[in-house]
Length: 179
Ligand SMILES: [Zn+2]
Image (cartoon, rainbow, N blue to C red; front, side, top):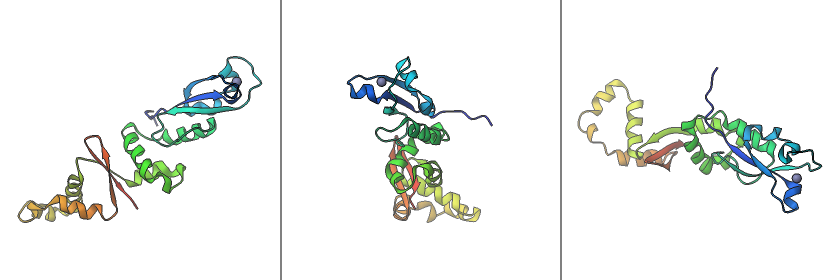
């Protein structure tokens, strides 16, 4: 199956021995290959320096904090490779709020279970949810009074106090199921 790779985290890998000696020797690499970089690659020649370290990184959607070993970075990049581009921003938001509650290796699956989508606001979510979960008969009924005058904002308050979580997104909210 052909998959388009859209999440492409990068790492800055440096030599620890050089770093300790006050020199920054390193470079940016694609994170998914971080564990394949050798000290010789990094120095451009054979070297007795052995330990490499990820000193900076970008594009990990919040799944990597601080410094780490190249193999850890590659592992996390591997996990993220499964994410689609449109999932990257809500995934990062989900990690921020719920990431600590579970193991990192399950994050992508759990994010997908929890993610309900992007909506203009809570009321818009409540309205869509009501439409999706009602029968055709109910849908007809909802077009007529008093159902056509439902206060969706209040309905949304009920929904969001019962296990839904809204996180600010550009131009709206991301909705997550939180348990
Ligand atoms: Zn070195």
